[in-house]
Structures are given as structure tokens and as C-alpha cells.
Length: 238
Image (tube, helix red, strand yellow):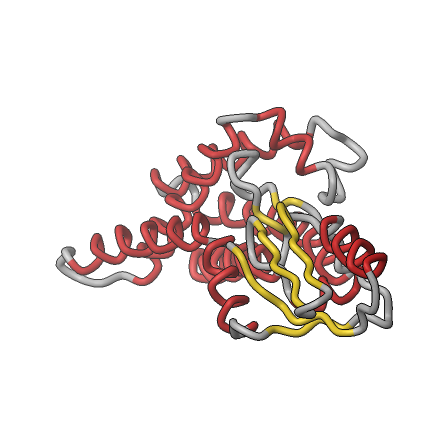
């Protein structure tokens, strides 16, 4: 995508070069054309970059502002584009499991959660299996266990696969939900720490196939699994 911005504060050819060089240093920027005469900068980028990120790399005497696009709209579009794979996966799993319940003689919310969990773990483990080493390398960047025991990434992928099969077969609900609750609770610690510290790290939830940044989406994803496993555990114990 390409956006044109107004740049104020440029007074000479040297300013033009400095602004261009600074903007080219921003991740995902692929091209920059700066005009001192028109006080404009045309930036080509792989994905939308917030205005604040562009301003951050510029000297304080240069101010950048939008003139053609709405930042909020672009940020929303960029968010949906970035997380499209995860959103589609959740949509498909939710739709399939919901249709199963709607076509059954009775609607059982516990059964729906079990099928959803099965679909979640089987799908997410599939993407991890496509490149186990790539997943392991990404996972050890933030997971508290993988940081100390790198091979945990390999084990975790197979745990997800086993959990998916177990939920599909409805294998001993108390055991399987307890395992899920513990595994996902430990997993979310590293995610929370990364997001709260505002670190820019690739999320390994879909393995090494998609370049998804760690964000609140990952927290919601793990948190949902924790809540559902806890709810099903309580139900199974009663």
C-alpha cells in the first residue's frame, strides 16, 4: 500500500535526504519519495504503519501528518488483514461445531465446547506440524518453559494434537480438562509478559506458517481455552 504524508520542517536538500533515510529504516517500508518543495512524503509499505511509528524515527524538527487517509480506518483494516488467518480459523471451527449442535436433537453447550476444543487443538497442532523446528524456534522466544527447555516446543505441538484427539473422543473429561487448564495457564504467562512489556515478537500459535505478531489476540485465544477447559472441568466434577 502507498500513502502520502505532509512533512513540515524541511528547509534544504539535506533535510530531504535525512527524512527519506529515516523513513526507509522503518520495518515494512519498501519505498520513500520525499519532496521538500511540496512538503510531501510518499511511502510504500507492506502493511499499514501507524503515524506515531513514522514520527518516532524522525528528528523532532520534522512533523509528519496524514493528508489523504484516515489513520483509524487504516489501522482497523490492517488489524483484520494481519489476523485474518486466526479469525478465519475461529470462524470455521465455531461454524462447524455450531451446525453440529443445530442439527442435533438437542443443543448441548458442553458438547459444543468439547467439539470446539477438539477443532481448535487439531487445527492449531496441524499448522505447528508443518514446520516443527520453526515453531520450536519461535516458541522459545517467549514461552517460560521453552526458554529453559527448548525441546518443549516439539512436545507442546504433540500435546495439542493429543488434546484434540482426546476431546474428539471425549476421553476422561476430568483428566483432559485438567491437563488443558494447566498447559494453557502456563502458556499464557509468557504471552502476557511479552504483550505487557510491548515486545515485538512473532506469535507461534499457528506455527511458522503465518507471520503473526504477539498481541492481545493471543491472550484472548489462550484465555478462551482456559475458561472453556475450566468450565468443562467444573461440569465434569459435578
